[in-house]
Image (cartoon, rainbow, N blue to C red):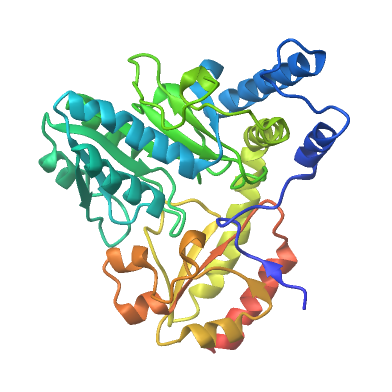
Length: 376
């Protein structure tokens, strides 16, 4: 059976334009960017620089502020552990994050306790947003870092990055932002935000899996202790041979994300509103997360009284998630929804549907028909 794809927050289809850039680099134009003595190596290094410029332009910073990693998980680990290892030595051992953050963030924060940090995981409001006034109350001069994601991977809410960053700066702490779901979904301009460190992932924005990046602010400088040691690539912060095809694909995907942002959002808003029009007629269906402060592509819907088996059967023509793709093997309901205050039954009756660049009007109409057949 052909399945209609509504899982774009788990991963996105590789853009055809991205594959066109990547394909030759696996064979005819291969090269190691670190092999500066060879023609192929110099050509590869030039392509890496071009890709860094493309990504920097898309996220509003200078190319030298970006280092390539294997993905957002590695970038988050490097940002949190690398920075907190030094913050602890400055008598700033407290590291704050939130109960709905991605598991790689909460796990990294907790791992910092191995070298003397104090991990603190704070609650969020029922709409999934951070309570800014409560965050201000727990701040003091011993906080070394606040880590919060920009766009939530499961419920799609957009946090108030300016306020969170201002609180961090005012107290002398670093603000790390997981922006894996932000590229191509909201405008990003790092130079205009009080963010010290930010993580990105290519495959959430129509690029390849296996490549990400970390933004490291230079002024004032965000200092990091590297996790990987070796040849000293990426300013010594992330040693290892650079994967040329993946980096070139990431650069092109980032360029497209910036170029297509307005058109993508306009079209996705229209498709999302069509689904919500149907939801408004179904009294048993509710939207999880803040209704307005969210990206258009995310629809985390709660079908009151229904089981996961009923939902899977009712939406058997579609591919979607119960929650984060990194938690898909868990049998328990979404920890994110539970952290927001939903009951076990409410969390279990929720699914995540995510609309993307290649979702069609016909896809959405078929989804709407399935919802009405299931609920009416």
